Amino acid sequence: MTMEASTAPGNGNGAETPSGTQHWLENVIPEDAVWTQDGKDVPLREHPVLREFQSPADMARSLLNARSLVGRKTIGLTPLPDNATEEQKKSFEAEFRRIAGVPDSPENYEITMPEGRDADPHFVDWFKKAAHGLALSPQQAQGLAQGYEQMVEEFLAGEPRRHARQLAASREELHGLWGEELNERCDAAFQGLDRTARTAGLDPRETKALHEKIAESPEMMRLFSAVGQTFSEDTLAGERGSFRPAGESISTEQFFAENVFGGKGA
Image (cartoon, rainbow, N blue to C red; front, top):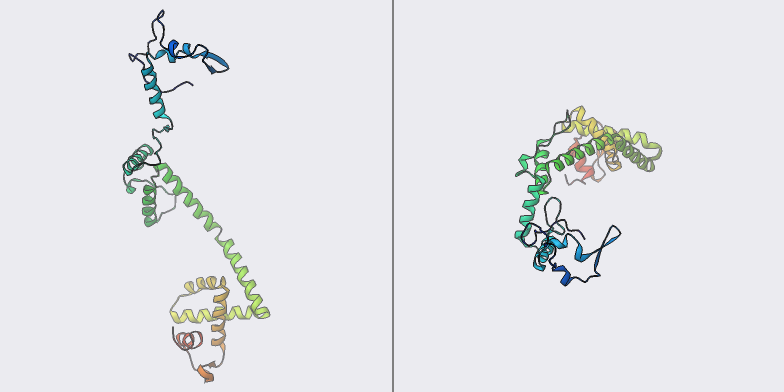
């Protein structure tokens, strides 16, 4: 096998034994021993690479040097042995970071975002610390950041479809519970939410956002439907079968205390 890495034999200049002098290989390698390369048999005694070594000691040193290079990566790192010490591990990581170009500190990463997109400073700080902890090169960190941004964009683009599927699933479940009263009970749910939102001081924009939220949840729709139906009645049943006269107001807090939390309050 041709060795790519070897020490200079003998006197260090690689000179062959002068012609006419018996080479030491002829005394230690059988005459019929051959090296097959590219379909040709070359007598080991006459192999030009082997004849460069002036003594068995020179060849042994070259062999040991070549063995030490086995497994060495092209970036210059030798894999750690299974029983590596902590000092060896630290040295390996330091050399890896140096070769990969990992910045000295998280702040030295330069993460660029797509044009027109402002990144959250808190997220960027977290991302840089995570990249530094994982020993990512600047190129790897930038690539990961771009991949994350693309994932977020795809997720947001699919949000309307997910919302539509959730609404359909919620409506189907409620239809199984309410049947023909579905629309009436849904209207009552939104009325109950509106009443509660006004009492809580929410503005119309916030209330509309809550409409979309509860519409995805059959449980919330059932809860606010009960609220809406109760508020729409002329009289509201109190505790222990007593009745509240028509026209007498009841606060949202009182309603929940009496009808939702069983008179125990929130």
